Image (spheres, rainbow, N blue to C red):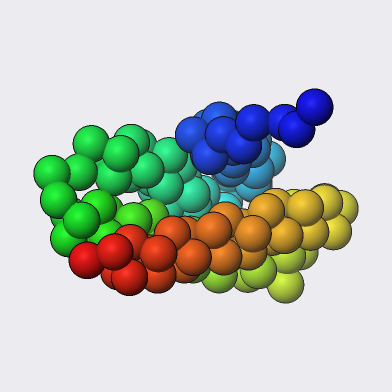
Amino acid sequence: MKQKYDLEQRLLEYSARIIKVVESLPMTRVGNHIANQLLRCGTSPYPNHGEAQAAESVKDFIHKMRISLKELRETSRWLKLIKYIKLINKSERLNGMLDETEQLIKIFVTSIKTARSKK
């Protein structure tokens, strides 16, 4: 039996994982700054996807999906920085998050392209 693909659930789990990364960052000036930025951009694709689902037009849908895409790209950069400067112990644990971020970026890019072709 084929498993149903649920982007909403995947984004919920992604947001929860981002929160766990944020909670593991050190309570330093740098750690707090990155934590605030990552918490904002890393959790926003989930509610923005909900906004896209309630879009009033294809143009509105594309706009909201592009916001999620932008936030995912920013999240990727923050995760790479955390890993690069080894801000958390065992920063290689971020590889799974980076991979999931890239997969989500590809999903949103494809979805936007599909919506544009239907305009």
